Structure formats: structure tokens, C-alpha cells
Length: 272
Image 1 (tube, rainbow, N blue to C red):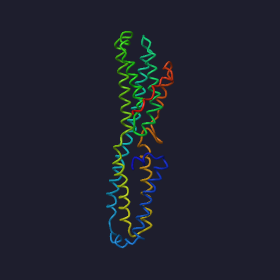
Image 2: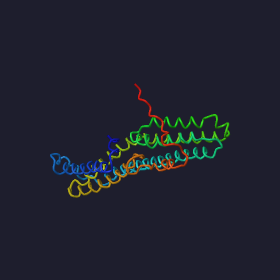
Image 3: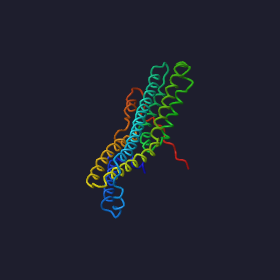
Image 4: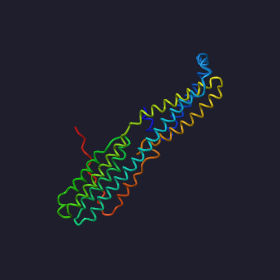
């Protein structure tokens, strides 16, 4: 349920939060002053304000931890994408500067970058990798591992090519790991529940004043909606309003002599 909510668009995320917290505010006012349960509830009148503060502090702390985790994951996603693009550029630069003809390497690089942008990036929205991109990356490794490179350009050149290609693969693995990470789901559940409990605490310290209760619940609900909504928009680094840019990888397609655009590997046949 949390995953489905976080995959909504901007309006959907904020609308869901508004329905949750404003709905809870109206329900609490109804229970306290209009429902058949109002008499037993009114008997709890007299709870002091510090009781509410203790719950609100827990909500604030956990919200801060959640925001920190989401922000850190976003920074890791940016670094992984930039590192991948940088290492691919290194392979390209070495292939151009080497004495031997490495057109096949540049063709394999073009196939890999195209596959990342066209196949794997959309697949990451569903926390999945692309078999076609995996095939393209294997093609890059196969080309830079060609023994002929060491004979024609020297072992140091091939070692540098291999190192850059492997680092690009490591950055890709980190990118996929970030896209598939769902460890924050439990924190989201905890934060949402603590927000509701904070509203309950607010209601308990305003049992003698219905308008004051509704005002306090509405103000807190608005603050929670804004804070949690902004955090929720950044939960998925590779989609949504604040998604990581593909520009570093797209710039690689503008490099000269990078190979034909038709070099994409064929899509794998489905298994019977």
C-alpha cells in the first residue's frame, strides 16, 4: 500500500495525505463533541499539553530521520549516474587515443548507453533491471577484453579499459540497487501512524473547546501534509518531480565516432 501511494503523481500524494489528516481531524471532532461516545471521551478532559508534546517530538524526530534517508539516497543516485557516465566516457577516450582501431568498443558503448536510456531507465520505475542492458554491458566487457588490444596498444591500455568498464558496471549495479531499495516503507508507516497519534494527542488536550480543537488539528494536519508530501515526492530518485537527470548519459550519445545508432543488441527471446 505504501509503495502504491508513493508511486502516485504529485497531486495523488498530496491528496491522499490531505484525505488522511483532514479526515482524521474531522473524525476526532465528531467523536469528541457529536458522537454517542462523547460522554466517556469528555471524561478524559484535563490532560495537560506536555502529553501532546511528547508524541509530537517522536513524530518530528522520525520524520527528520526519514527525510535524511530519502535525501541521502537521492544524492547516492546522482553520484551513481554521474560515475557511470564518467567511466563510460573514460572508456571512450581511451579507445580514441589508443594506437589500434577500437571502433568495435565505441559501437558497444553506443549500444549500452542506448539500452540504459531506452530500456533500463523505464524498467527502474518498477525496481527492475533490463536483460537487454545486461547483454549490452557484456558486449562492452567482451570488446575491451579482446587479447588483440594488448598486442596492438599495450597491456597498460587494456588494463585501463578493463578497469573503467568494470567501474561503470559497479556504478550501474549501485544505480539498480538504489532503484530497487524499499527499506523506507516501514519508516513511512511509522511516520504516518505517529502523525495520526499526534492528532489524537492534540484532540485530548482540547476536549473542552471544539473550535480550538479543529483549528489545532487543521494546522498540524497542514504542516504534516506539506512536510510528508515533499519528502514523498523524493522517495523514488529515478521518477517523479525530483527525479535524477539522465543528462550525463544522454551527453554520451553526442560524442563523435561513437558508433551507429543501430548497434543495439537484439532483445532476448522469452523462455518457453
